[in-house]
Image (spheres, rainbow, N blue to C red):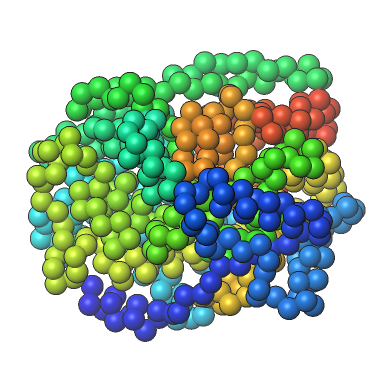
Length: 533
């Protein structure tokens, strides 16, 4: 641990400030102004002014701004690939051969020294934590209640998780728990963004299936599926499976009757550092909460508290865009999934609640010589750096005629209204590897109402029970190669890209219906395009 401390001190850099992306349409700027006014006057309590919500980019001169506007404008030429389209993660794109490790490569533009930092972070990401007390130096503190012992055990091969399969367990899909606010204090905390939602009074924010010796786990997630046939316009019938969720063998009595169960599949880790460096204004430029342009798409930002300073800022990570930074995302996972305390989330007993007295009586893994938490700053520095620098794989087959035809269908069907193709990251990033990069995530990172079929009924910050953040599509075509399955959406209910598209509703209903009405050749072409990402 001493060696890690020394190493991190040498590598620690000054932190930069977040930025913005601008669309060519002048109306987008107007929407941003309206949005921020609305947030400050209604969604945010008191006279608080949101931080990190600039509506113009200050990192670009007029010449660079014009270049960014031009290069991020959606194409109308589908006769050939666009310039730089191959390198969908910018200069950091991995050009390594496709394999099960395609999501585990470091950004290609790291320095030699940074490669060493990445490898140390990888080691900590794979590290199995153990229960306290332990003879293993600086590795104890697991739980007492937990879902897994290591980050890598949830983020399988740095890719997406999978729903439970018989007795195979649920280590890469969890049940989030939340209920409506009861008291005036709870309602005030939600209004002031001090709480994202209200946890179950006994089981907390997440169902923990595992426990250290001497303690009982909280129960098991159980999933029932009902098959639902869907007929496409050409007569093809696709079977969709609709899940329903329950908790089996609850270890600490019944859940609150108002507690909702929201299943969450672990998402892929690639490109997170690039997403973190998209200017807030570039994301806000796509927001249209009142659908002023009448296209049926009403993307909204999730405004959350920054975990470090407590300022209001833009959420961009998680299924409901509830987290503002990778570091906070990692800290929340350490606390909620493994039961490890960090400076950002100093919860030595993880998600144990006041109602779980035996859990709170268990020993923790704090060692004062290393600091007041179980995972001290050097651990967080390295895990964060690793998470920020998992490379996006290069595109494949992007010049094939069927892929280009599928790209045209994707654009013309209206999919890019939510799956925004391109951004240019800001200048002045903490790590130059992410600075001023043209990237192709195919996401607007905003919240969209996806209809009642995909609704979980659980509000998270500004996100309602019907809303989900648009997930990035880069790397989606390598899911089966990396993870050995093709489970998609927030709960893995979709067993193919076709099923995932057919589950789209709400704001995405029109695009979904165009796919369902297309002939087989056009559907196959669109899928070929997605598989090339």
